[in-house]
Length: 200
Image (cartoon, rainbow, N blue to C red; front, side, top):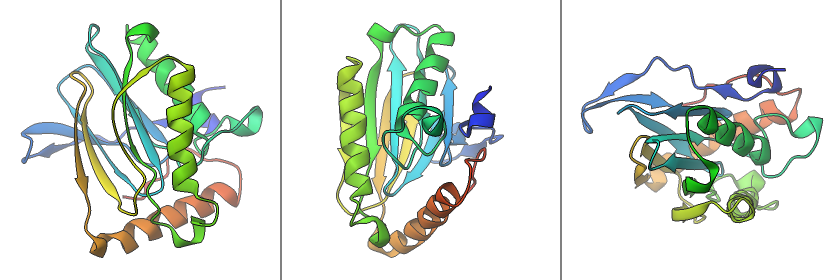
């Protein structure tokens, strides 16, 4: 069964030109991942979700995923809703592109408490703890992290070099990010996982 049928999809955004950075950019939406070794920039918007950015400095290839819920075991966990599957798919795609697991380096972002309806379950906090525990278990070094707090973030990541830029968004944008994330969560929990879900 391929990744799309299981609910995790390779980002298929045709891309756009980002004049601020002067490069081609590609969005990574909730439930997506992207792997590249060229000069493009991967961009995602995070609230309670977490994005793990992995990079092999020798192979000069890297990638990003974007997931909302931690954990997930067995068949039910084989979807974009769970970080464990999102991490597995991203690592496997990097290995296919010439990366070596022992050389992988990570930068992780997100896990903010921006969804009032999810604060009781501490989804953002659980996501942050999950990704750090997962990377520790896999012996993948975490070079940088910006996790937790109550702010949404926009992540700009260059997979070929491993460089990352984070923009913490102002309070005025929290409501819009929270609404998008709530709709995504509702889609995940109200039925079987689908493919890519475009929110941003």
